[in-house]
Length: 580
Image 1 (cartoon, helix red, strand yellow):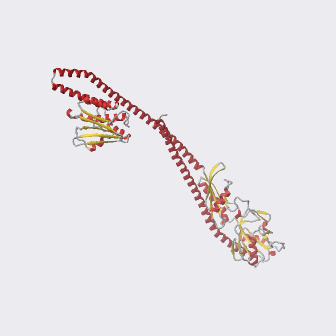
Image 2: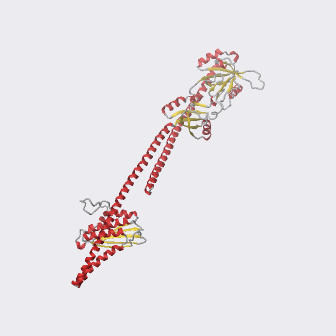
Image 3: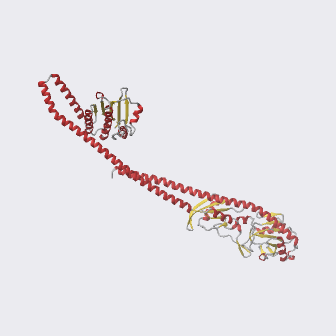
């Protein structure tokens, strides 16, 4: 494999790698931006739900207080219509009062009076408009029993749970052991004028805190409908989610208290084994936890956002469809592959075209140089053969002048002949055949055009220049051609061109000087080096104005310089210096 081919292959590989690196970087940055946008969208949704819930909690707390006061008034109204002794009260009376007050039910609790060894005395619901609460025990009611006991003792409840007024206590909304499927709001009143506690209550009241939490399904459904990328929203209880269900045995019924439920609201269709750990981590660190998983044949992005609350803290889970991101990334990947393919193919085509152009240009330059070289050699050999042929004539002429001519005629003839021989010797001393050939060719051309051409080249031996001979020949040829063209505008006696050059261990120096037909400004000198500029006539289409531009390009290849000096006598000199 040639050096040029290796260079082309390396260039294509480098271009492909640069394109690959650039597009991979863009792909990764696009992916991160899309994920960040999706995560921000998730946080925004969670923030909206959190804001809605907290606002609902504030409103429901106020509404619960109002409702508790209504339960207290209902209890007082019930007391005024009943006998202070429980045995004198009937269930029918309670039903009538219930209907008048427009509440769900009324239950009367009283100490059972039973002697229970090693156990506290039971407080039972002995009268009720709800058949399921008749003879209902409260021993397993946890802190509710404590509130009942305190009410019956002195009418004052001190436990932290619930809402308290004078002779009145209202527990948080919850289910009952008589009907665990229903949420209820209870009120308990006892002012020591009766031997029982009056318990009016209502069911499914939508303004309470718990109904506010459970009523988020509508908001969730609207959010999912309005944002297609949202697949599911859930509200997890960080204290119980992932643990065994909390079930309390009350009156032979399994009761799951609402505060202990693992999921407060929403659905839980996209399940993963790490969900409980992520919920707990989000809650404990108070930071959003985001994970990408594959569930139910879908790539999803699941975020867990902790929400701190004074009553019931929870963690909102928002499940987003990762497929939208993946689809965008797939499109970007296809574009990346196409860009790399097209870029690499374009590079190959460009390199191929440039290589062909360079090869043709080089071949053309080599062919031109070879033609010049051969023509110059041919001219030189022709001149030498002519000189050999003329030598006999010269000898005969000298013999004739020595025999029959005058001394002055002989001296003049031999002087001319000596100058011609000296000129040939100068060419031979150049040492480099190619350079000697171009100088010879220019001598012949100068002689034909009546140009006085002087040359002095020192140190131009073959193989010791440090610069390609072909480039030296091209520089000398272009400089002399320009000079010959310019002096042809002058009378024969003023046509003079001087070529000088030397080489040493530091540089190669070549200069050509001539007289110009007219004064030249510094501005025009700058134009000489522009490609396409020429002072030669272009009617024949042979002058392209590339001479000095080529010289400057050749010198530039070797980090050399081209200078131009102008004297007051309209003398111009071009100097080419190339470091070696």
